[in-house]
Amino acid sequence: MASRVIWLVIDSVGIGEMPDAGDYGDEGSNTLENLYRENPSLKLPNLEKMGLGLIEGVSVIPRTENPVAAYGKAAQMSPGKDTTTGHWEMAGIVLEKPFPLFPDGFPPDLIKEFENKIGRKTLGNYPASGTEIINVLGDEHVKTGSPIVYTSGDSVFQIAAHEDVISLEELYRMCETAREMLSGDLAVGRVIARPFTGKGNGNYGRTRNRHDYSLSPYHDTVLNMVESKGLGVYGVGKIFDIFAGSGITKSLKMKDNKQGMEITMSLMEEVDRGLIFVNLVDFDMIYGHRNDVEGYSNALMDFDEQLVKLIGKMDREDVLVINADHGCDPTTESTDHSREYVPVLVYGDSVNPVNIGVRKSFSDIGQTIAEFLQTESIANGESFAWKVLKKT
Image 1 (tube, rainbow, N blue to C red):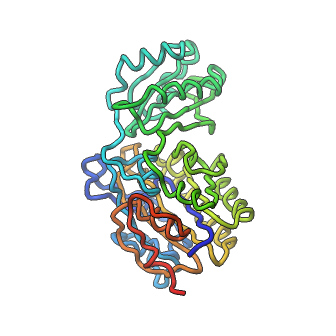
Image 2 (cartoon, one colour):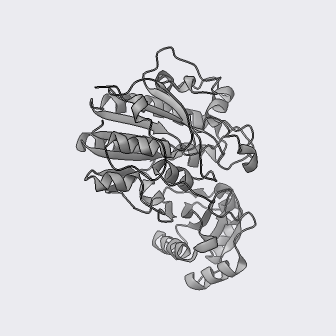
């Protein structure tokens, strides 16, 4: 068993469409392989050594004859393809019905009530790319002081505001107000603060002061089980936001993937037991949603390079788990998430480099981590610890 698990979520790095991808408009999506197809210079030697190219269904990623990690992929059992759904499922919560979507915008009565509560009119109220809507409505927002409300293909209520027009504190209060209002049939997965800056005329850009307000998890997850065992759970990036703080001992923010990995490695020097749970969001937020093939590729190569340093800091009893939460294929016309399988890689001195196949649910990952750390089982998922752990 393990004394410490380092769990890295490489946000949006899907590995091929799921059988029901057509129901989501995602036929042909394959984030990782399509990146390899579009960008011949993409090379991920360390992930490839782990067995990335050996995962079932993979045809483009280079194969290795001697993988150093256990490898496979996982299907999503919950309906949906968003961050909250993916992370909740990998931690043990399988949704019976998806979080609500609002392809025509939010109900007028809701918007009116929201405006009354925040004391301001709003702009927008339609699905849009966040980087586009702030440049379409940004000048009017600066002139009127009305925050921009919008949604996307995900279950989100997003509020954008210029930092010089509406302070971060006020924007965050607006999001808290929206979160309290959005319940029942309106209970979106996340309310997101989207602050931006810029001088106008199409030159607005989002800042890194984003803040997510998720629903509270419906029941205990592997995070709660680890805490109940008396072990620490250290969330890096937006993990705290995704789980509304439930089961998180300590949360550390990051400005980008590189810093996220550096924080993780610093934690590894400070913490010798428990779970270090990391979300590396740049792949999704900066590159996937903007269909930036080159940027996405470069971010993956940077991660692959940092991975060597992280592995060098692992102890004999450590286990490293790497997986994604959904896809976001930058090679397709869509700028939304994609319904894909996610890669699963498990590495450590105690791990057999075997094929774990195609897991039926992301929850298999959380159940396996629960067994690694010898906690109580979680509500969903089938552990594959028996398959990957070396016999002692």
